[in-house]
Each structure stands twice: as C-alpha cells, then as structure tokens.
Length: 426
Image (tube, rainbow, N blue to C red):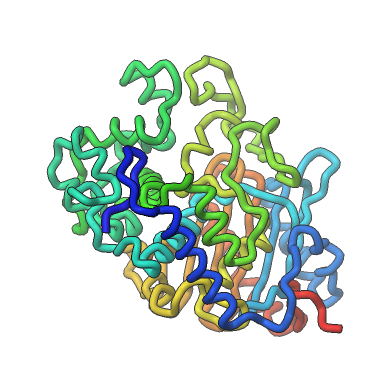
C-alpha cells in the first residue's frame, strides 16, 4: 500500500486516519475503567502531594535544585500506573510558582511520542517497520531525485527509530545548524522541513544502514514527515487526535521558539548566568538567549518539540507500558517491541535504553530544559523535567537518575496509596 502524498496521489488517507483512530479508541473501550479520568492540568495542585512522610523527599529535591542552580522543576511518581505524587518546585516565571500543571518543553522525550505514533500506524496496517523510506513506493520517495548515495534506498523506518540509518552529526547536527546551512546554501530564510531534508539527503551516509548506531535528530524529523505523508495530515494534528487523545492527554503541543509565543501555563526557560547571548537562528544578527531563538525548536517536530505537563507525560507513559491499570493505546506486541532489551550501543524504539534488568530510560535536553523518564521493573516510574539547563548538558540526567535511586531507596515504601489520574470514588 502506497502512502498518501501531497503531490496528488490520493488513496483515502483521511479514511485510513479515521480507521486508525477507531482502532485506538476501540482498544481504550475494551478495557475502559469504571473510574473517570480527570483533567490533570485543571485538578492537580502542589498541596495534593504535601504529605508529612514525604517532607524529606521535598527537602532533597530542593537541595538538588540549589546544587545545580535550577529555577524550577516538576516531579511525578507512578506505581503500577497509579499517579502517587505530582509536584512542582521553585519558580515557573517571575512570581509564578511551579505546579504540576506547568507546561515544559521535553526535548528528545518527544521521540518516544513519535515512535508511538509510528507503532500505531503499523498496527493499522499503514506501514511496517521494515518499509524502505526512500525507495520506490516508500513514504518519502519524493526525495529520490536528489539522492546520490544509493545506500539511502536501504534506509527503513526501523533504522530511523533506532538511530541506525547512517546519518551523522559530526559536522554539526542539521537540526541545530540552521544559520550555517542558510549560509552554505545561500538561503534567505530558515528552511522548511522539505528544504532541509533535500539539503541533507545530498550528503553521503556515514555508515551502511543497520550496521551501527549514531544518535540522529534528523532521523526523527524524517519520521515526522513519514507520519505526514502516510496520513495526509500535519504531524502535530494527527498525533494529538490519534495518539495523545487516545492516551487522554489533552494539553500537549509543539513548542514555539520565543517567550512571547509560549502557551498558557507554560514555564519560562532559564540558562546559567554565564551563558552568553547568541545570534538568532534566522541569521538576522539579532542577539538572543540561547533558549529563545538560538535554535528553531518548533522545526524539530517529532525529534524534540513537544511541550507538556509532567503529569500528562506520566499518563502517556502509562498508556504504553503494558500495565493494565491505565489502558494501553498500543498492542502488547508493539509494547514488547519498543521495550525489548538493548545493549549499551543500541537504542530502543523511541526509548534511549532498555536494560536487561528491565529499566526503561528516556532523556531529553537542550537549552533551558532537561527531562528524564525512568521506568523500573518493580512498577514504579519517576519523571522529572526542569526549566533550566546546566553546564553538564545532556550528561545532567545522570545526576537526576542518581537522585531517583536515592529517593526510591528512602521513600518508595512510604508513598501514599492513591491515584491522581482518576476522580476519587464517591
């Protein structure tokens, strides 16, 4: 089955999209809980998680924030799909405290959301993970006219998901090199997704697809375009209607680049005091804070542009974890494929790492934010997202992971038995 395209080749893409949505909603209805899910961002407050027995946890989180000079952070703890704890720390903006409802950029955690969309499309019969992306009949065959390295015809959707397609960032990540690419190509304005893809696909691959791994934001931009071509809809629109809505996540969006365009309830993002202003990504010469115009964050799409509250992110994770308390939006087979153990040099399908011990890890970092999801084999899942970047960059999440380990040892046994995901029973 050939994908829908914008060049006039149509085959009832809208009908297939509706069918895909019906499959997801049917999976929800089959195990619909008696309890009623709540609007998390409208109901959760810091006070709901204030518990004397967890005051020491609060104290350690605040000390951690002081140690790393973090303005604000949001923390959620789940156990067996029950949301036990949801709290904001520090400040979201001037005179605005962080709360569970605060929206934050989650950077590369977005890849987990995109991968889920791809897996759902596979379940709907609209693609397979072994489909070749650029080959005749492939979702992105429209770009074949500019391909010089014929190895690109061997790139599959699976390769893109697992960062095994052969793309490299050793000469600069194309998703964070807009100014350089504009100068090289004499572009007068920042490229749209198609223009950027055409520029990068003229290059040779760094390795044969499927023979090695190298982290690629560009690969997940391509997956975003695959979703658009297959469904005939804009990436954000299709994902919100068919993936996030099925997961009962209603306040997740693609980020905008500037503070003036932030969403209602979204945090301000902060840098360390020694972080100097940079030129704006559009080559205007205007100097800006790195987190507000240094890069074209919205252009990342499914590679890193999602904005969400941490409780809604937790509910999303609960919908793809194979536990039954929150109905899953994917089949057990898809979830098992996404969480199959990987070695130290192999990425999972959307997850960074799936350890042999059963710990699932997803990280996300860029200027102004750091995000970490740790899903443990005992059924607990801890998620923290900050509104401040640190000098450790992507390595900062290692310290957050260590914080989780310490806090779990001290407080897992005393976490209250409750579930903020659902309306309290009468």
